[in-house]
Amino acid sequence: MQIVLASSNQNKVREIKEIFAPYNIQILGITDLDVDIPEIEENGNTYFENALIKANEVAKYTSLPVISDDSGLEVEAFDNGPGIYSARYASNLGGYIPAMKEIIKTCNDKNNYRARFICCIVLVNYLDKPLRFDGLVSGRIIPEIKVGNGFGYDPFFISDELEKTFAEYDPEIKNKYSHRAKALEKLLAYLKESNQ
Image (cartoon, rainbow, N blue to C red; front, side, top):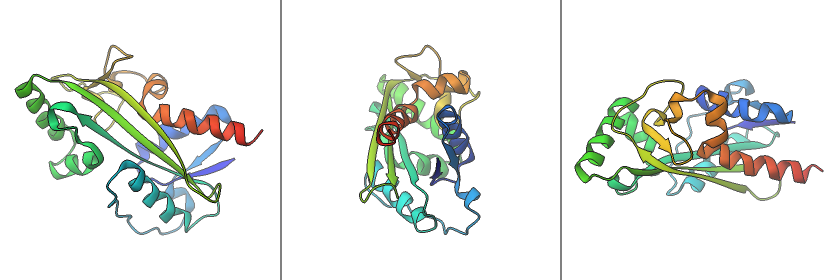
């Protein structure tokens, strides 16, 4: 089975390919389609709306099933931001390292480090209606940045289920415990059931 991932983020494409590999499902990124897809404006107000916008746009260029995800980091001390603006927040500050430093400063000021990662995955071109799968990981921000294997905000977030940041683990560990992994687990269970 082939599924198109509505993303040109090579880190994300690689991560999802690794998660799907044992299930004989081939994940194709946008660059694998060999078509020129214009930049997609994510102007939704929720993770679901943004994921659906991306999935529907990419579905115009392929008859294959399409999945898209929108994820974000919600930090209590940051009024549950940056949330759906997580990537844009980092971009506006010149990258994830400066963004993490700002978030750490706010957490220190408020002495509150609780946070969570959210992921919403949408599947289109499969049934007449879009299907939605959500993943959530609660945890905390640590006041130092541990650059390693991860990407995005991984270097300063520790899940309640783990002892180190996502960036400090090998991908196979992160791919069991991350918010994206939890959403994809639900998607895989659905695909398995619907193909029996």
